Length: 95
Image (tube, rainbow, N blue to C red; front, side, top):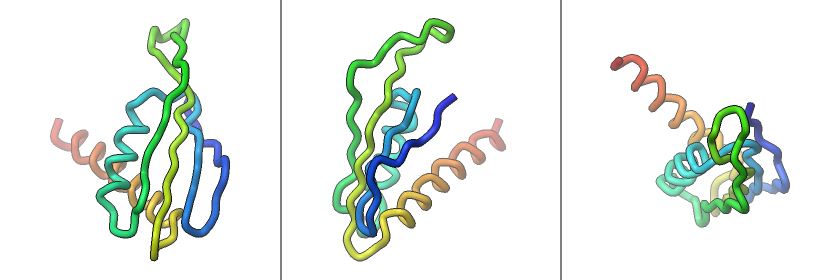
């Protein structure tokens, strides 16, 4: 099970760890954030992924960094996550 660990948070920046993720959510979130007004930096890094013994997937704990200007970082992060949820919901409805 994946979860988010907030490493550092201020008004205009958030650094968080996506525990047990791979590039899937990290990349989608980065791309969604980069499309938002006021986002100065949205990037993530992955160090040394490991093979999960049960799923056979390579997993790691990507670290995402978000920096904003003129808009609250938390607000933009929530908007980007909602956009991803909406995209997934629309895909499910189309099936």
